[in-house]
Image (cartoon, rainbow, N blue to C red; front, side, top):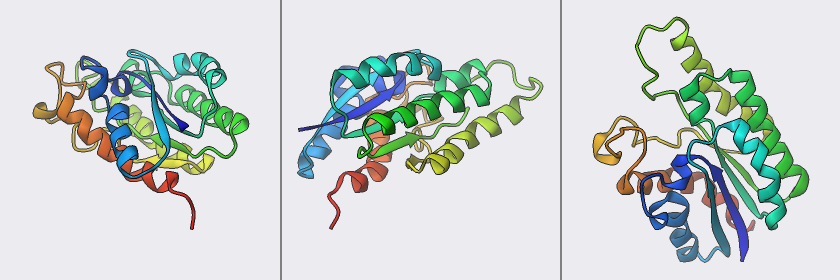
Length: 194
């Protein structure tokens, strides 16, 4: 079995849910059904930022060989209003480090928007920040030549029926949608060529 690393925050960890309800765990069933010999490993840490991910990446990469890598960090950067250039630099470092150590491993970047409640509306520059933040993922995926999930939370964001009462974290049904969003991009990259 080859290791498929899901590296993210609470969205990946399946915050507030049993581990089996997280989208990486749900994708294991799809991998098995498709006959793809990958083991989905969930390295989601609730509350993690791109800077935190950058700090813990080395330990994760040293733990096992990596056959494929899905990076889903940045939501907490957006919540905290961290400078887009800083988030971009951290995500770029992680994607490049995976490539350096495991050059054959497909890499996928999950896109996010700043849809979260950032406090009182009308903060100066908030609209511009949200625009720049949302754009950084597509630009980074293009420049690094990695697979791209346009929006990890597509179909879930703003839908109370698919979120926990906090309206930020997907519930079990929402995690199913996240799994579908990821699978659409990931599955073709994992299939053998030819």
